[in-house]
Image (cartoon, rainbow, N blue to C red; front, side, top):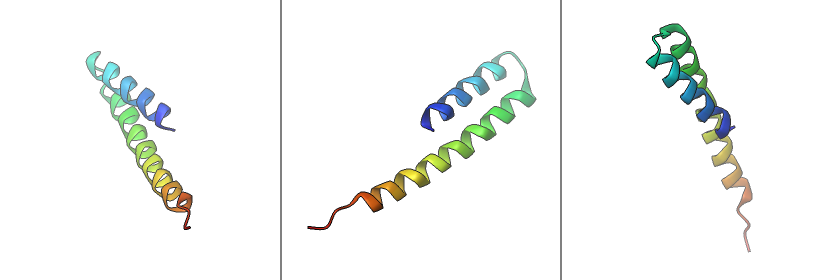
Length: 53
């Protein structure tokens, strides 16, 4: 999922450089959503992965 976030961030940067504002905003929005989903899943996996001895 982090890979998709990076892809959409790069797409947003390239679209912004070439002046495609709508596409850049859409790609940046998707990247933000994917990043936050990744963070939530990462935190859940850390919590569930702890082993008590």
